[in-house]
Amino acid sequence: MKINKLVIATANAGKFREFHELAKDFVSEVIFAHEIAKLIVDETGKTYSENAMLKASAWAKISGLPCLADDSGLEVNALDGAPGLYSARIIHGPDNDKVSWLLESLRDKSDSERKARFAASLALCIPDDYMLICEGFCYGTIAHAPAGNNGFGYDPVFIPDGYNKTFAQLEPDIKNSLSHRNNAFRKIVNILNLSK
Image (cartoon, rainbow, N blue to C red; front, side):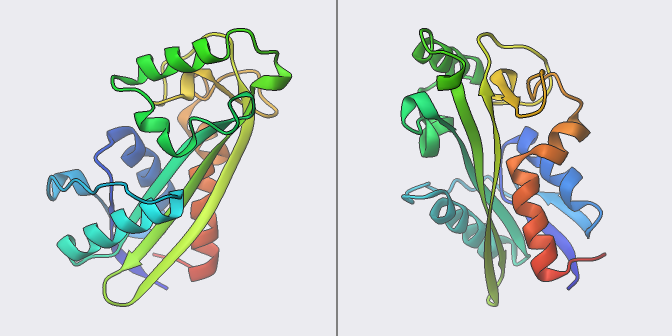
């Protein structure tokens, strides 16, 4: 299957950069939705998939183009899966404040209790035709202090399994190859046999 233009349905520049790197080998033009319009989609779903579908279908309707949206979150064992669906809005404020909240919540937790995973659900909506949902995960541990300047969100405190650096310390191409978004996107590529 060929998709010439793909809208990445996000206003998050960091997320767009990740998706651009993932999609550029399979799509001729990757478009940042935030440059098309300032659409805000209420994330009222009860799952990552529901929120991803809401965003993908709304952007497909407004753009008339195939749209890829995700909803993702960080699920920490010691917090019974929190912040999860509410990772981006667990507290108001910049990413640093969310990281501080997480570290404070885990202040007395052991390394084994700090096990976590990033989860992503991707929705690809082709207007008036098709909706595909795929999920991906990346497993790791929450560090005791932030480290690194790459990435965004909780990247400075997430150490993926098999590494001793946080996502924010890893080179972007290494992080992208491990990420939950990559794992979900590869499923879409395989199911649709995407090619330029």
